[in-house]
Length: 419
Image 1: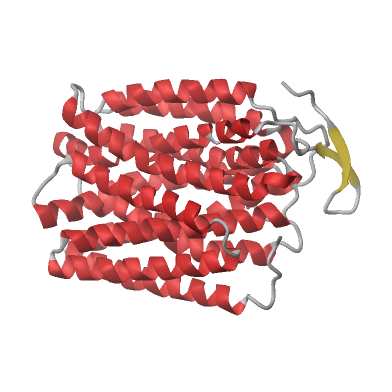
Image 2: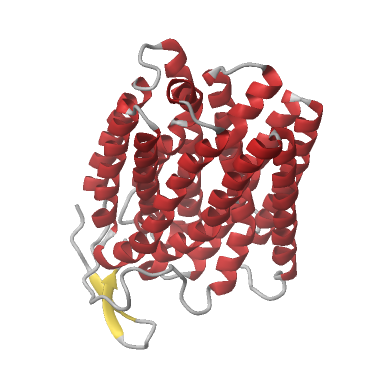
């Protein structure tokens, strides 16, 4: 493991402070950059693994679509609470200091999911999962950039973003297949996930990142932000990432209910496959557009989310499964491009000693609407029906996506494209 090294840099207040020096170009081989993204993937597999299983828990325990979205929202609560702390702690105490406890919480969440017998247990498991996810989207993604070094920042942004969305899609697919083909439908996938998380722990223990040694400045718990001069990049990322991840959150929380209404099936493999296809689209589109200008990527993300909502309205009013699947794929592409564009802008404008906090800020901006709007849609669907509830949700989110796209287009001549 690399020895710790520090270097004096100018703090925000102008004084010098010793901070974590990122690995120099060439100090870590490229395979380590890929491996550094594995803990992000492992935790995100857990993040959505429960999605196809909710129909089983609903039948066993008994709760409404509104309660289902509340269970999902506790994941957002844990995630947002984690983001208020994990980015700052990671920048000050090191990536491993945040990642190892987060992986421990993820393992605890697996145990609780596997033994859940009521709504309270599901809420606690989702809360722990959210805390773990908040840690990996801040510290974990920053660790990928640290390992990559200055000359591989574009690769780091691509791998960190794809690790998140690929894991998010693989989780529900594994859960759907394993729950339909093996005994213990609500247990087996979490046993498999515990093994995957154990390998992630080993990766973090050996990860070649350096520990910062400077004194702490400012509050430990605070709304995450970015250094002066990077605010526009953060706004651009949130403007597109937020509608995109809200669209995929809706598919994850209420997609199985929509499939049940349209297909008359509660197949967990079908529900898991749709979620996997959505995030596979999010992964593939990022590799396809990675070399485009970042604002072009963001504009395309906003357009994709807008088209996704148009397709969603069409699907629920025509009872068309193919159009519903198209909506999910477009939602995945919208999140993927918004996330890649936002992370890439921050990677190129924010210094290493503030990068985890900047990643946390991007995700706070995305996950707040991703928590509020699907929950509102769930309760609205209980009150006026799934078709009308989904329509209202789609119209609201489409307005946000169009606004985000316009913000990006309007900024083209105000913020220079990073090299």
